[in-house]
Every structure is written in structure tokens, then in C-alpha cells.
Image 1: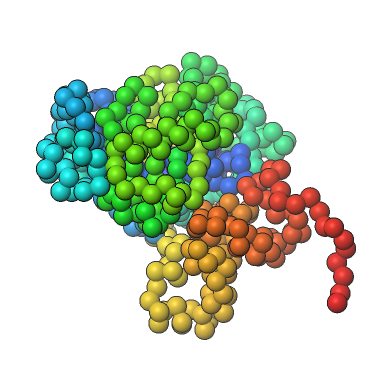
Image 2 (image 1 turned 90 degrees about the vertical axis):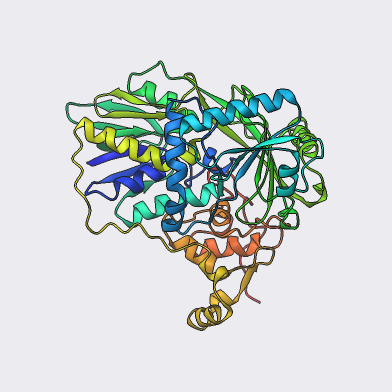
Length: 480
């Protein structure tokens, strides 16, 4: 019997699990995929929004501003890279300028600090590579960038280190309510019991809510396509560059990443299929054309990959954080700025659980600190040599593009939450994320996974399920 079951291993579920693990509770995270951070938390803009875009008085506005203020400390505790690089909403004409003034007023009402409106000269002195046609901008110095999947992995890992359980490949198929608890069933026949449920299931949150009797929540997927450029283009801009927003979102942006790449996107296309994450020629062309209008000196030959994420768009225009029934909370429709708001959402839901009757007694042994995943790469030469002497695996480089060692890969497979497939190793170590996209290192990583997990080489998958790299051997093992 768990005190709280959290359905969904994304950034919201992860932050909530971490917050609840600071109390004396039995917590379980249920994730339908082979790993955590497999939905919107692995494919978004990685922006910590300042909070000027949301409607004043909305949950989005309240939790965005608070979450943004919490993010720097949260990332530091979790050992995750974070940079307060600031954001600029760029205008090209009088209509854009009017919209920027509205955003400024909205941001002031929301409590965003240090906002200002820049003229042409001020804007281009900050960002020389912006288009000369840009004439003004909203400047939000409190905006930042973070790695969303590393943040999710670290939050869930910290919760697990403090006693929380994680069950992957647990796709919720049915929820039964009894007098004092719920029984939650998976599609493969397993089940757990919990006194409270928090539904943080992303684009599937409406289906989970319906299992507990609430059918008024509707979630629609919105496709967002991105282009990622190599680190040689990472210095084109230093701020996150937005166009003026529309009804479909904050528009296509140009932003550096915390790892030194340049990210372009996303598009915004409403979908029916909640499993379609394919990129399209039209979508990627739209990204490239739009960003070429915003900035100059983007070398598209530096493109190393493209990807698509699905945002969970709710039917209310705001975050849907409410009670489904006694002891059941929905955290649905957490689209942008959900990443930015996630630490504050976790605190908000924790207080809801307290109000519902969940007894919250502080866990004196709670440790909020997690060792950085990239501590070896960031160590001094002397520190690296010391670690290599202690463990020679750190001296064997497996991923040449990103400089990732065998020791780091093995550690990622052994650390909560453990990597179980190739993409899991990629999200934790950045191995396979360089210019070759795994062309050289993938066979070696597959061999390490096979050894660490104790399963045949041909059973290793890219991202769980049927994403196998090979179907078998051409001949039996032989000795030479």
C-alpha cells in the first residue's frame, strides 16, 4: 500500500515525487514507457520562462513566476546545468511593438522582475546577429535555459534515493476505488494500491481521469518540430529569441542550449494522433525559414538532428490542477510553461494533498542534493587522473563527439533511475548526441548495456518496446 501513486514520469511527476519524498511517505511513480522523461519532458524548448506571457490571475501565471524563481536553486541541488541567459521577444513592426507593450504590462501584473522594452540600438547591441529588420524587443533578464530531460531524470533519481519507487512499462489501464484506497492496474496485468493518486500523465491525462470517473477533461496533442545545430553554432545568440506570440503559442524561437548547441523551433500544429512524433518536411522548412528571418549567420550545414515533441493542450486554456474525486488529483494540460512551473506545481499539489487529509511529516533523512551527471567531464585534469587511477573505465572514451567515457556510461546504468536502453544512456550522458549521432559509439554502448543488464546483445533496444537494433545473430558464437 502506497500513500501516493503518481501516474506519469515526466517533469511534473518527477518534481512532485521529489517534493513528497521530503516527507515520511511511501511514494510510487508509474511510467508507461521503458524510461522516464519520455513524453514532452524530452522534446521541448528547454526554456525557463520569465512569466510575462500567461494571463494574469491564471495558474499558468502564478506557478510560472514562482517556478522560475525556484529553478536556479532546484537545478543546483539536483546537479543539473542551468543558465539565466535572459529572453528577448523581438518585434519587426508597429503591430509587434503594440503586442510587446501588452506583454510588458502583463508581465508586471504577474510579478516578473526587471522587465524592460528595448529600442533598435539597444537590441542589436545585445544581439548583433539579429535581423536588421528587428526594431524593438521585450527584455526579460530572469528567463533561463535548462536541460528538461536531465532535470526530470535528476528529480526522479533524487526521489528514488530518498525512498520513492519507480515502475516503468506500467501503462495504467484501469483504476478501481474502494473505501480507503485505489487499485491501479497496468495493461500487462500488474497492479498496485495507493491511498492517493496524482494524475500527471501528459497527453494521456484525460484518459486516466476518465478511468476515475471524470470525463470533462480533454487533452489534445500539439506537434512541435525542432532543428538542433552543432556546438559550432552555439554562439550565434546568447539570449533566447522569441517572435511575438500568437494563439498557437510563443512562436518559433532561436536559443542556445545549456550544452552549447543552438536550438530552433518549435512549430505548432494541432493533431489527433497522440503517438505521432514524426518530423515533416513542411514543418522543418517552416522552422528554418522563420529562424532565418529572425537572425543572420545561422549555418544550416551545422544541423545534426531534428525531432518532434507533443504538447498536452487542455480544454480550459489554463493548467488543469483539480480534484477528480476524493483523494484523486489531476495535473493535466501542463503545456508551456509547464517545465518552468514544475517546482511550483509540485508544492501546489503537495498542499492540495495536505488539504485532502494526507499527513505530511518531515523526513529528517531527506537529502535534496544529487551528484551532477557530468561531474567527470567538468572535473580538472588532476581530478580526472585520480578517478581514472581508481577506475580505469573513466579513461576509455566511448563517445568521441561528446567525450563520454565508459565509466560514465556504466554509472548511468547503475544510478537511479537506471538507463535501460540506448536513448536512456544518451539522455543521461550525452553519448550519441554529437555530430555523428551515435554512428561510432552505439555498438560499444550496446555491449556495455548488455553486460550491465545481463541480457543478450541483440535484446538491447533504442527506447524500449519493439525498437530493437537487430533481430538475432547470423551464426552461433565460435572460438578462434
